[in-house]
Amino acid sequence: MRLSGFATGMDINQMVTDLMRAERMPMDRMKQDQQQMEWKMDQYRQINVKLDQFRTSIFDTILRRSNMMAKSASSSNEQLIKATATASAGEGTFRISEVKSLATAATNASTNEISSGDKIDPTKKLADQNFRDETFWKTGVVNRQVVTVDQKHTNIDLNTELGNPDSVVVRVNGVSYQVVEAFGEGDIRATQVMVNKGTGTDGKDELEFASAVSKGARIEVTDFEEVEGGKDTFTTSEITTYNANGQEVKDTFVITDNQTMNDVIKQMNSSSTGINVFYDAFSDKVSVSRTQTGNYNEGGNEMTFSGDFFSKALSLNNANEQGGTNAVFTVNGLETHRQSNTFTMNGVTMTLQGTFEAGTNSVTIGASTNVDKVMDTIKSFVEEYNELVDMVNEKTGEEYYRDYRPLTDDQKDAMTDREIERWEEKAMSGLLRNDRTLRSGFNTFRMDMYSPVQGLDANTLNQIAQIGITTTNNFRDGGKLEINEDKLRKAIESDPEAVYQLFAADGPTHADKGLARRVRASADGLIDRLSRTAGGMRGRNLNHQFTLGREMNNLEDRISNFERRMQQVEQRYWSQFNAMEKAIAQSNAQAESLFAQLYSGM
Image 1 (spheres, rainbow, N blue to C red):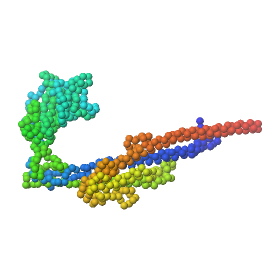
Image 2: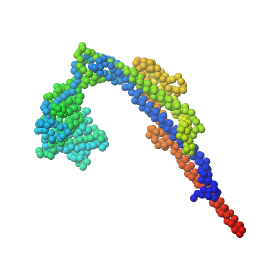
Image 3: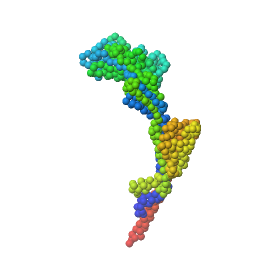
Image 4: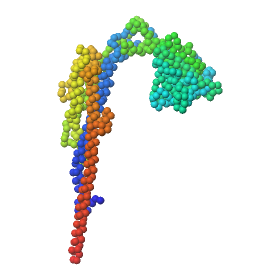
């Protein structure tokens, strides 16, 4: 129990508070030190974030050949031929003197209306439709299983047993896979699958894919068997097309009467055969076309439809196909073919827009260095570098105000928000003044930028000043760069490869590396050093993993220990004052008793 001035009349509570305020002064200093460490850590981390952004930007911009060797293509007649260029484009020109034909896609369409009476409603079940010829339906058993892959692997357990593998259709995310007895060779292997009988969980069947199926993939397995009087009504049909290598691409469709026309069309459009199908309600016909232009099966059909559903229900006749054609044109005196109207020659991508005869038109396609894009890339690199230099120069050159320590809670209570803000601006200033890690890191950057690149040809560019990039004349800028745009443009126009190698050369030693590659490596090292000091990167997110964090932990322990001592000191003060109150109270009681005895007879 605490007695507060009952005997003495003194404000004991205020006296203890004042005494403890003096006792707590070392704790206030420790908390101020802790706040300074937090501010310092935040400033280090801000610089580290900027360094990491700069490091990433170097990789995505100036180190990419596509940016530093950017080419632009020009066409003398863009209405006939459009052109774009990649970084690998040569400096030559192409003269296209004739375009005999453009590439077209193979098409087919129903020969007759496919319905009898009311036209097809694509949203209703096929069983409820009136097809012109309905003799395509079969009876039997159709089992469909859908499995969603929980993790990436090649073996998938099924819920039920499958029948004859020849009567199994497997689709992964809508793409048909070839069911085989053994895996083959070549590109087709990636879309092959085997049915392993009884090897799955509880003796169920298992699918084994030639290549791992990704997590989340939707596998649809359809197993069908024709049985007289079976419970299911279905039909099967097949489409065969050809890929760019002339190889057959087949897909089997198991169509049940409870599906809609929209379901069937969606399945056909998502198949690996590369076709596009739509039903036209006005003509009551189906149109089919290849998604790719060109001739992939010389002398034969590009699309072959087999099965009663296609021939009877959709009235598709293979003889009615309008075959795909190649683009035929003459370039630099050579007549050549392409399966697409868009193609690439020597890094120049051309798109044929129309046909024209020899002698009537002639289109010249040229490729040259896109000087503006290369300059923009280099200027962006220099601007980011200068921003980083500005940021660090500001921090390392800030004035340090020794008299402006972080405010305590009591001090904040006595100040306005504006006064607190202005005080803390000065209290945060100069925490990184003349920081050795930062100054050392940016001195390394300057050496990286100004030192010649070793290992390049003697007659090529090897110093940054040779392309018009130098340091500013003001020494207070701390090594910022400035660009002579005329000199830089001239260097890019004369030898873009040399300019690229000046920044991006990748030699065996640091001296042999290009300027940007050196700076990126040095930035990586500085990021690591700063993260060891202030954390926040490279997996150093816990206080014990970096220097300032460990110091803050130690200081926190000291504060906790000091707080316990302060509780003991405060208890001691109260005990002393309580004892004094009790003694004075007893003295007062004795005095009153003596006074009563002395004057009781009067």
